[in-house]
Length: 210
Image (cartoon, rainbow, N blue to C red):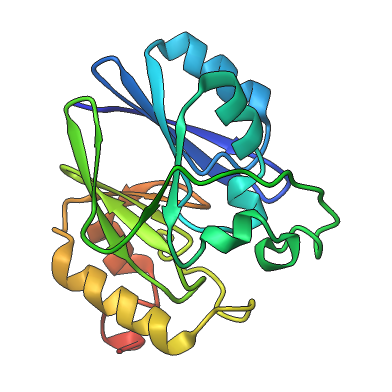
C-alpha cells in the first residue's frame, strides 16, 4: 500500500503530496517551500522517480526546479499545460510577481497514461476546466485531483485557458468513474472521501449538471 504525505506549501496554501511505494517516491505539485519538501523526502527515504504537476499554475510548480535538481527525478505534466513551465504569463507567475526558472519536461502525459511508482499504478484522467491540461491521477482507492475538484468546491474557471463547459464535463466524468469510497487528495483544502464530497460540494450531483 502506498504511503501518502501532505505538505501545505507556498503563499496560496497548495497541497504538495509525497507518495511512496516500495523504494520509489513521487512528488505531486511542489508549489513552494522546496526545503520542507526535501526534508520530508529524506525522512521517508526512497528514490524520487517523478515530480508530477497536476497542472501548470505557479502555485503548483513553484518548487519544480529545486526538487528536480536535488533528486534527479523526471518531470511529468499533461501535454496541454507543458508550455506553462517555460512562460511565466501562462503559469500566472508574472501576475503574482514571482520569478520561476524554466525546466525541461521529461514526459508529457495524455489521457489514459499509466504512471507507476513502486507497486502503485496511477491512471491519468485528462480533466480540463481549470487549465487546458489539468489532470487527475487515479490510483487504487485514491485520486489526486489537483484544482479540478476540492472536497467542497472546484478550481476557478476564469483564468486564461479556463472553461466552465469543460469543467462541468470533467466533473460529470469523475462522478461516473470514481468509486464513492475513493479518497480525494485535492490541490487545496483538506482531503476526504468522494462520498463526502458528493454530500457537501455544491458543484457535484444535480445542483450543477453538465
